[in-house]
Length: 275
Image (cartoon, rainbow, N blue to C red; front, side):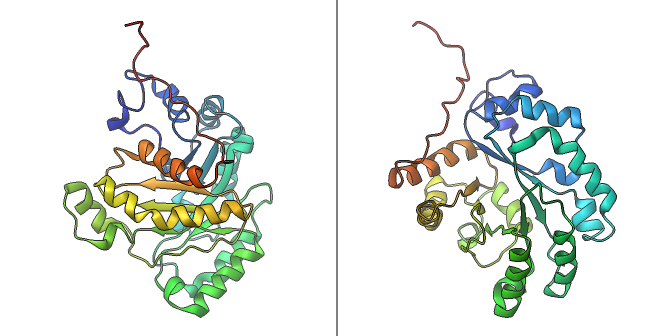
């Protein structure tokens, strides 16, 4: 996601052609969640424009199409997977990880399917899996089984931390909408690989969002000291302030890890003037 309407004129120059918005977003953040790929596989030409707008070090975490993960549930998905992998090839090293988001109905009993799917994937990419069935978090045996499957494929477990969001009742339309859609699961903070990925959902109120991410600042600092390279995505119910909040999170981490590289300077949203 890099083209939210509420960002235009605030974080992104406006008007700005759609094919230039990613370039502007990349001045704020150095990674992006590829949610649109869940709904449809983009064309190679479209993906090539993404590559032209970003540096090779920019990180795309691309969600596998739902036809693979939700409709076929990782079975008999060779053809749509082949089409998807061919489409994203122009990104080259920018493809930081392919994100296998599984539905809440995908249970520990389905782990043999996930194991077979991951073992059949090309080793040219890194993979990260997000699960939403409560047993993976509440049952130690199921947790260990999933960790074993992921470790065998050198894949990461992506936590989606909604604990701060669900800590109090919603107070806005955006929060009420998210309340009915977002998973309510225990927070998980263990990394399985050297490239952990975190998804964090805060609140409309900035102070509550910041307070809720204190845990992740501590964890991220620890991962960096261990030599890992984490990617953290900061969300709020309406995402209106997400780029600014992401940079604030980065600043808090960098204050404790000064050797962490700074984020790029954003493109001004208005032309510079002399007066």
